[in-house]
Amino acid sequence: MSKRTDVTSILKRASAGDESAVNRLLPLVYDELRALAESFLQRERPDLTLQATALVHEAYVRLVKQEEVEWQNRAHFFAVAAQAIRRILVDHARGHQRAKRGGDRERVRLDEGIAAPEERDLDLLAIDEALEKLAQLHPRQAQIVELRFFGGLGLKEVAEFLKVSPRTVDGDWSMARAWLRRELRENAEP
Image 1 (tube, rainbow, N blue to C red):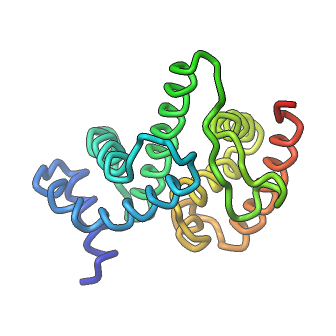
Image 2: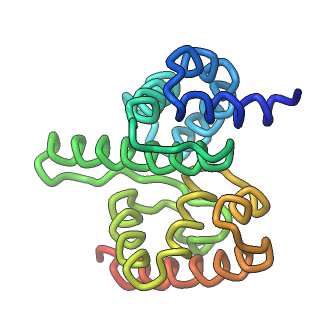
């Protein structure tokens, strides 16, 4: 049985109420969650106090506390993990901003072409606000950005989770990046 199949099988048992399944899950997903956390934290400002281990543990705690989620498969788990990681990073950025009493916002480096090359450093809170706006206009596009950027999922995994073709995901991903690029540029602080 592959690691991918193990994760799906364990998630289904956890959804059915098997509490021991939750304990078997972390070793199977930890490395991927940690790699995802490290990639996000590398884009943060150098004096950031949040560590990859803390981010992974906080996200995992939020994931396993969700009693109403009926886990479908590995892709579903990482989709929800992407949302948890995004919330943690945004909450941390807001807390930091409050601590500085309206001072500088945290910066995150966006990959995959959301930002124009000369504008790679973007405000995490601005990204969150733009994604919220995109979700109102095009929910699937916003979800694709979240899954790709915050969840680290590939086109095939996103397509599997959303039950659409990889070609549809690719098209939506391109349109969402263009929309976000324009939105972030228009709302950039002077």
